[in-house]
Image (cartoon, rainbow, N blue to C red; front, top):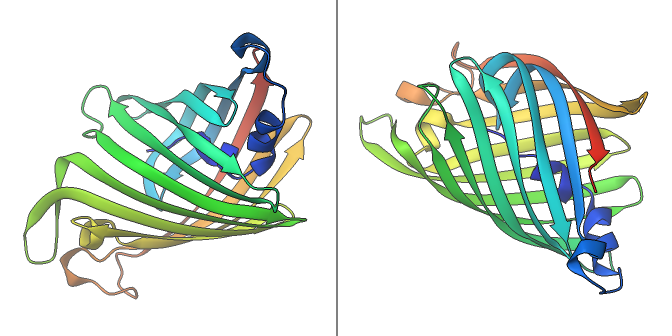
Length: 233
């Protein structure tokens, strides 16, 4: 699972530039951008999806509204995400946003996820703070330690950034609490020759079958992401 809107929300300047633009016509104010990249390991919300993944997408933004799609070449087919929403930035540098995301898969890689997303945060010089709360429904089933199954999930994440470095804590709740657990991620993003390069280390705590955070089922992995963003219109 992934969505490119994460990078949009991490930079409130995008929403700000749309809000202060004079209203003339949709054609004049709308911004259409594209992105393409590779991931050494595709890790989303602490969970490894696939290795050696090519990806790309398109995003349109207009007066704080956004919509887009993101595709990834996963092991057993294609993941394609669709999302839309609205982000409002206050003059103080804080922002609030809400949107809808659906994660769809071809072949048998995974069942689909559909979720409502809420965002808040802000940037203050080199320091940024981003909070996400998501509630969603899975077309498959999660299983907890007692053997009960369900398809509803919550996700909460807090990210603190400083001058390219960041640290994220994320945790799942509801029916996914035991099977998906929680994770920590630390990384650094820089620009090299017009490309955005990120290196990160992720530690995932797996609570399935009653394991503790110190169990052998915990995983620590690293990945490198290289992406290129470009203007279409």
